[in-house]
Structures are given as structure tokens and as C-alpha cells.
Length: 317
Image (cartoon, rainbow, N blue to C red; front, side, top):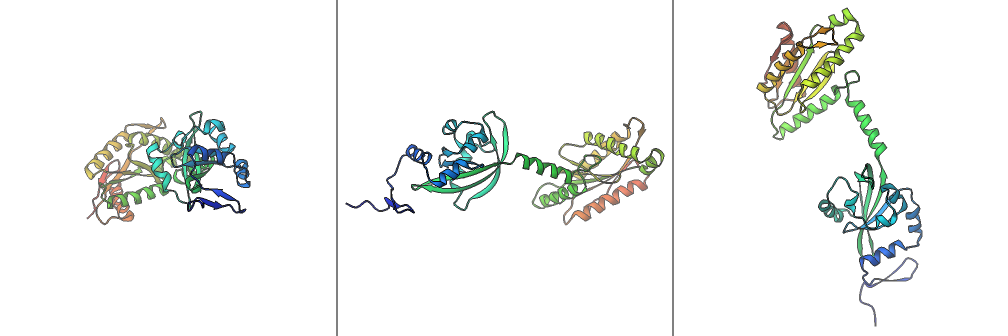
């Protein structure tokens, strides 16, 4: 009597392979006892590799994956994906498992190790099948050093070297992002441009190194006064910008006056008092980066012409 359709297949070597459905535990055992060249490569790979079923259970894992998570192989077999995945809960992971196809995906995540520390990982994952059971093959590489390097590089390119504030590049990026957000319906934001009064005289009298220390100390003092939701950056020289999300003209002007007064009352470098002139503007329809910054710049120079140590506001048309 012939076998039912689709219940017998042939291997690449011509041997018949029984397709009678096996239990999940039986399939796990078969895979773990496999002795093919592919399993040899799996076992000896330097990359951490784990094979999961659609329940999130470990079907098999190599020694590199055990070392990666700091578990023994035997301990791994009792784990589920959410026991080490640090960024997503169990219910979301179970929804994601079937969404990965055979073409695969590459993404970054974090793994929780046995000692409860976390590491950044880069994961290449794709669907595969064994005896018609869908599984997920995941190749994991520790990306902690890469992540640290990326974060260091990001800090270098977005931070002012002297004051450790956001630099002009980062401010421009964030201002453009705010312009995009407000066009999508987010509340209007305000922009402040601040200039240290008579800074050239400070450099001429005390030297440029002292002038640098004034900018550093002033930056630290302003950073304590600026709300955490706002972005304080050094535009260049003795000019600073403050981006204030979801802040209207009235609130921005009130804060600018509070900041101006706060700076004027504090000794800088324990030697001198400094004052600032501040220009204020708020987003209006059809604004772009240049139009907003020009209004803030015009307002700041208006404050300079009005005797310094004051604020001026210019609104858009």
C-alpha cells in the first residue's frame, strides 16, 4: 500500500525521508543529534547561532550562543526567546516570529545575559523549515563595541568641542526636525538667539584662553537654567541658540527674560559678571530654517542696538 501524498520525500543523496509528523520534542532531538556537514559548521561557528520554533522555544543552539548568553547548552534548551531578548515583551515577540520570511532581516537589539547584564547585538534572522515545521534561524554578533563606537562618533560630530553643548550641526538638524514636526500638526515652537555682550573686550583684557573659560562656565550655568525639553547649543563664537519645543511667544519671551536676569546676577569664572542680548521668535506658517533664524538674528541685533542686556522679540508675518 502506497504512503499518503506528501508523506515521503527524498534527500539530496537519494535516501527516502519519512514525513510522518513528529512531536516538537522529537524534532528538537533529531536536530540536536544531526551529524551532517551543515551541523558540523553550525557547531563550530564563531558566530552565536540559535534555532527557534514559532513558540519561541530553543530548538538548538551552538556553543558560541551559550557562551554569548553565559548559559550552558543544557540550560539554553529550557529557555524561550523572551528570556534573553531585552527590548520586547513576550506577546510582541510571539507576533514577530511568524513575520520573518526566508529572505530574512538584519536588525539590532539587546540581549540579557545570565548575570542580568545586557549587550548590544546585531542579528541576522531568516525562516527555515524542518519536516514542514517553520523555524527561525538567528545568527547573533555582539555589537557592543560597534554601538559604543557609533555613539562616540555621534557625540563627536554633534557636540561642540569647547563647551560640550550641542554644536551648530546638531542644532540645524534638530531645528529642521522641529519644522517637520510642526508641519505635521505638532504645537509651534520658539527659537532664541543669544550673544554675550562685549565679549571682544573680555578677550582683549584677559586673553583668549580666559575668554574660552568664560564660554565654558557660562555654558554650564545656562545648561542649568534651560528646561530639559529644550536644546541649548553653541552656534559659534560667543553666540548660542535655544530651541524650545511646544513653546509659544509669550512663554519663550518670559523664559528669555528669566535667563537674561539669571546670567547677569552670576559671577562667571568667579571673577567677572557678563550680560547677554537675546532675540526671540516663534514658528509661523511657511517658515523654513533660514526665515526663522533671520528673525531671531534681527531680534538679537535689535537688543544690541537697544543698549544690550535685554531681549527683543520679532514675530513672523
